[in-house]
Length: 391
Image (tube, rainbow, N blue to C red):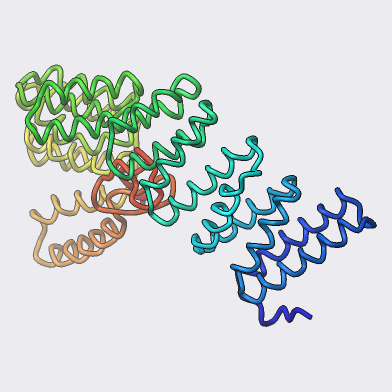
């Protein structure tokens, strides 16, 4: 008799799958037949080996069973997935290697087994082996989207952006809204490499290609704006930066310094102040109030910035606004008021900086650095400036 209290934790997950498969085997083959009886005996024998942690003997029996009845192969796939999710990729590999090595494996199952074995190798970190298997899948099934997506994942891990693009382009026509932003990021990666090499033409070419596949690519617009600034074409840089508002306004805080620099070079503070005011009316962006205040003080003086902050706080109260208003007012306060102002300012600074500068909108990962590829969930373009909550 099997003692469930002594079973390994993983086997409690495997057991329901094997029992279900056994029931299907009897149902499909007739519970009264001698063949079904013999199979059931072998099945329970394999189950007993598995639960007693004798996986080698169990897998031998299960592979022989499936060879005599390939209709129950889904049981082996389910078993392999459970092992893989439990981190026991070696057991999953044995299952799928045992299947692929069988000369009697029906052709209709070959691609599926190759895919599962490829997943096993990915889980084990053997990218070269996984790549070879996914390529073999495409030989048997040229339309396999799963094989292509996994090859893309491998090339992304290896930072082989050209190969990733080649595979992704094959999927673009079928799903442009999903694949386009991915290809765009790969071209931006190539643009970054060209930037390090000082190849300006390739930087701009790759950034333009990025926009071709994803017109909402903030990253490509930032690159092109930077190139325009490098050649002192500030009007063009402003157009490219302001395009980001249409693409994804949440990224505007990242480029506010460059925007202000461009307007400064053009000596057009009125246009800059007008645009910053319009942004404030339309978007709740971290850092915008601070940048706007700096520009107001630079061109209109201290009284003007205090007036601006006071009006802004009445209309949109915020911790950030209070912090900056206190900073300006404390300079003209009495000694007693200064101490109070400093205490309030210190408290507000702690509240203001309690959050990270950037946060992934997909998984919640936080950081003080902008990552285009989230280190946590591997999502592209989801790490954005974190919103500072209002008081």
